[in-house]
Image (cartoon, rainbow, N blue to C red; front, side, top):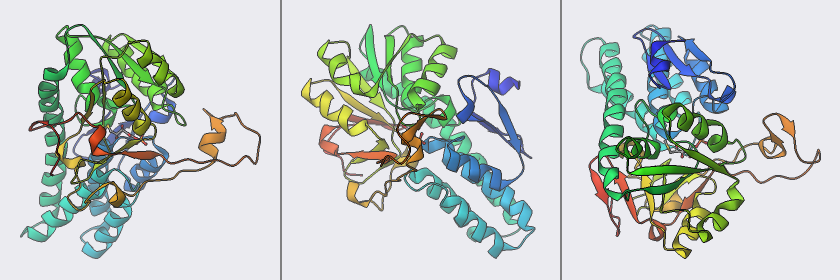
Length: 334
Ligand code: MRU
């Protein structure tokens, strides 16, 4: 197993090939895929083998580099393939944002466009890593001494080029002795909390407690949560925030119990074209993901299913948004 995997990296580029942890196999099988084929990355994004907003932005950028190399200087071919990469998943704006940055770089550069787009992809990755550290530093300010956090989905090193978004904050807070433990929602239907967050917490030595998504009201009523901290897939100009399905109900419950509700996201997750949550496209996924859990059928064949992958939390339920440039409080005007 690669040294970078041992150092808790979820994805990396070696100058020639792209490496990523096959997230669908976690927590039981730790497998790294190495590829020079952009189609493998697109397929991985669609299957959620690579997932999480910043990670799909960085992976999309390197997929586009691989597409460029395959296109052998045919710019129209490269643009067509890059637009397919940008459409692999619709909600996390980081993906289309990253591809647009590469297209802009190729337009503005005189000389070999590969140099420009490779430099841009590398910058997207290194900026992402740096932004994670900056968010963690700012986020520490809101973590009370000896506290317990509730998080949702998976927001750690698997989903960024660095330490993560909200899990990055929680990781640094635990290292500094401020944070005692993390409660993690299961995040059905695909179990990113159960499979991935619990796995990351274990690797990092952070005490973690798993709960079913439906147990959150009781957890808060029991007084066990000091604050909620989670990530985002797209944030509109007014602060409305799309994130993993279930986030909205967590925000409503946090409001009911006067528990601070924090979103941690880098600037690449903010969409200047979205005026509010109505402008955010929400991905709906297959019925099968609801009928089955980890490949096992849990509902009668032929049952109907409702499977939005994300919901949108209205800005008035968000206590603050933690970005690489600081802690932003309402009213939000991005
Ligand atoms: O469908 P997923 O697993 O890609 O959803 C991911 C999330 O909702 C994360 O919380 C989000 O990307 C923010 S953290 C990087």
